[in-house]
Length: 91
Image 1 (tube, rainbow, N blue to C red):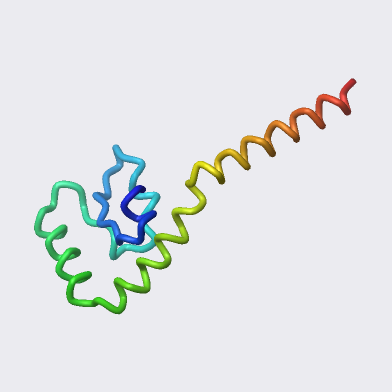
Image 2 (cartoon, rainbow, N blue to C red; image 1 turned 135 degrees about the vertical axis):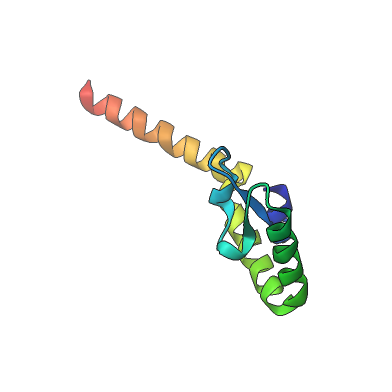
């Protein structure tokens, strides 16, 4: 997450034993886990398509904002506000 938060396009192993595939914005950032040839193909593709990579760099940086500490704090505060409000209605 730190990498794509800075605008780098990740290439993520698609494994059923990992939660990381959820961070891929499309199939171009995924490769089958354990398949080094597929990984090399994805790396080469991003190198050979700099305009696409640049566009996705912006999308990934924007996507990462929802995982920021500030966003997490805001969500936690909202959860507490809702819990307090619900408790007040029950009393």
